Image (cartoon, rainbow, N blue to C red; front, top):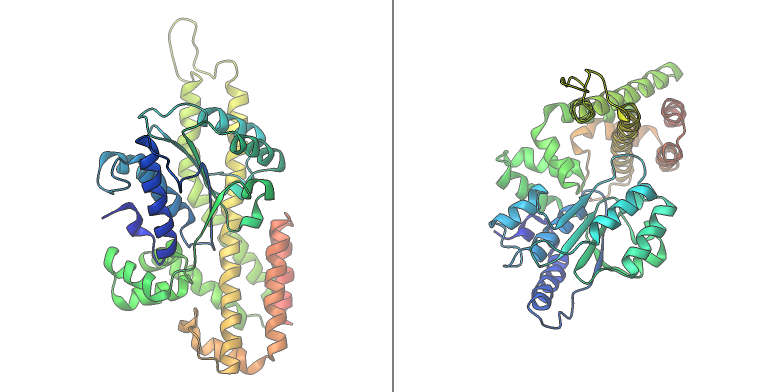
Length: 390
């Protein structure tokens, strides 16, 4: 089983990456390496597998057998421990110029094992303007054996000067059938559950996997999809908004609490808290308080991002519901992501005109834009709920 076998429904991208990996192996052996380049940009809709494709390509570059999938080097890439792989995922809302410059310095070193030095930069669109300018200089004049793998939803999310220097690999949304086959085959779920999760995940492979395996994830989705038929008055709108925001906050807390505690404990240990002996005390040594404050700021930023991502997923589920209601209204023979809420879909389709349904979709998209602009989540979601009722 090769490293590219996990890329569901991405045959065209796999063909491009396989040929590039062969060219890279030729370059390592002293050949021309035509078809290999030093900078790649992986784009595609959420859940299509941008990061998975980039990591698989990294394994193909670092593996002597071009990504066999079972050797120690492929395993090290998969778990992120390969000495020549620098894997970066911005944890907060943005990636600063200081972090980018530190990354560039680490990337400038020669490969430890003699093949390539690979930098996998997930969510490269989160780089600030100053960070993007620093990244551009590194991509313009890279060391001879350094390869940059950038991931972003769209080429337009990066500076034109960066994307013009990258070879773009565009991933597509995998079909429901392809995702269902993967879930049934690899997660050992029933065909019915696999089909439901694949349809509800709307091509987002990780989202589909969570829905197939996690009962709490399914219940949260049902709670979101029950909103359209529950907005009886303004009070119900405010209550629904509060539930949605609090659920996102609880998810962020659950996702980050354990990691925060581990990071804080490790940092305190590094700065000597609890140590004993000559010249030491049980408190933080000089510089520890500042480092701890910096860590807390990063953790706060990470929690905000997780909360925003959770809210955004709920809003996308609502968009899918109203899109499906519009399809039901017109009798369109298309696959419905929210087919399991057929009764509610038909109720909304009967009670609202197509124009009203479209205005509700616009209200949800406006809420997403407001959240991206750092509007208070409670206020933004309340305004959206009122618009959905109207």
